[in-house]
Picture 1 (cartoon, rainbow, N blue to C red):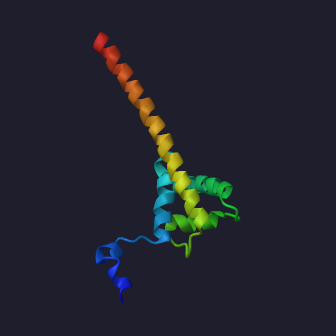
Picture 2 (picture 1 turned 60 degrees about the horizontal axis):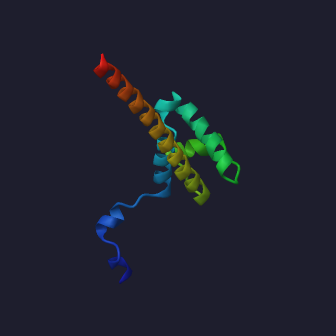
Picture 3 (picture 1 turned 30 degrees about the vertical axis):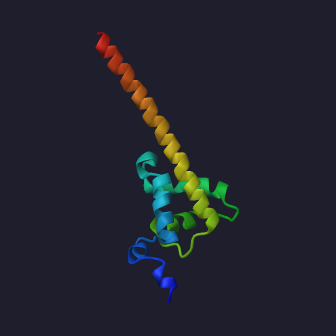
Length: 113
């Protein structure tokens, strides 16, 4: 068939399922290091996702996304996870900028002493 020639073999191997994408996204958006435990990170994901999606979100659903065992991922869930990743990136950027400002101030103070 002509359709098979559109994608190369490399492109076919690199595709990622929605479940895998969502599992990676939820772990990036709600890192365990920030929240202290997996359960706490999942709870924060639950709180965020329940505000962002129209359907009833449950902890069981969040856990299945976290573990990569969800059978399907809705579009609004994927959008909410993208939003969560973006918010986490912004938060991390603010922390890094604040840390760099502290280091610059410490180096300036050390240079004057």
